[in-house]
Length: 438
Image (tube, rainbow, N blue to C red; front, side, top):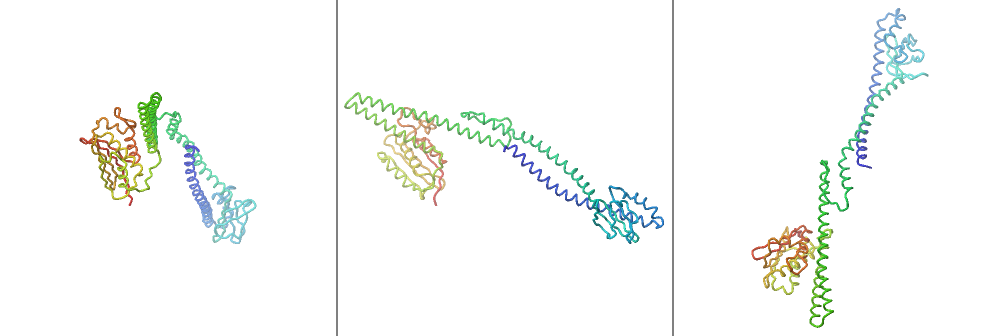
């Protein structure tokens, strides 16, 4: 069911529901009011005739009675019927003796009388001299009641029908911006991620359009990043592979020391290729859309101690400090191990020889911070590029993925990576919001 039809049906159901409730209430009230008014007419006519007859002499009654009945309007075939009888039950006069039955046993008040021709509603007034019965046909009451119902119910029903037709067109006009939005999305190609532009969109549609444009912007950014990553990865993988092939060919053509040197270079290139592949796998794992697993708490001091121990030849240059009193579960320990190793490798590789490298791990109630400083000074223009994937300064060795992996981990866990100079020191600060396990 379309939105237009659904809205029309819902509004029609509301209108019809209210109309039916009002109609039932109105019909019930109308029926009662008509019955009361008809009965009041019978009673008033009976009392009027009673008052007239009380002032007419008995010797002039037979002569005056037809004129009195005619003047009272109770001698018509369709309308009121009058029957005047003595207290003993004999009929003195009747305006409709053919169809209205003689009922000498009627008591004063309202009653129903039936004959072969019709059913009557009666009111009987007993005076000192006469019994006056005024009646009208129940069928005539019903006809008038039905005529009133038709005149009351049909116009609102037609009005509701016309209103629903107009509502159909009004809803179609109202949801036209939605159709324009649907059309704008349907006509787009699979590679068209430009923002959606509509002329004078509805205020209610603006959040949807904004969210769609934001989604497309993220998709475009992700696709662009993946294309750039793929291009750079292919280039970085091609270089060591080409070196390995060249050194193998050289080893096949030479012997002794030259051959061993070529094999050594091939081994070095293979090691670099293996490092690149490992980093690419880490990046693929970090960039995955799976939610971070933060259920297993771990000890910060144990992790830092293990990383420092694995630094091998550089352990003499490294000093570290740890401030933590409780286990943490803000991120998996394997991710922080990668962060510490990459930051330490970068510090050892690009700092001055035999200079100290300082690692400080600090856990507070709100954040986990890893700070590593080394003796180096980076060109301020290069600081913004250092976390870019495959970026390297000049002909430096390395894949250019270490700091970009750290930056991706920080982003995944809603943290940050800050790279800055401080006089003669280069400082890398990795920070993530923390949840302390109580």
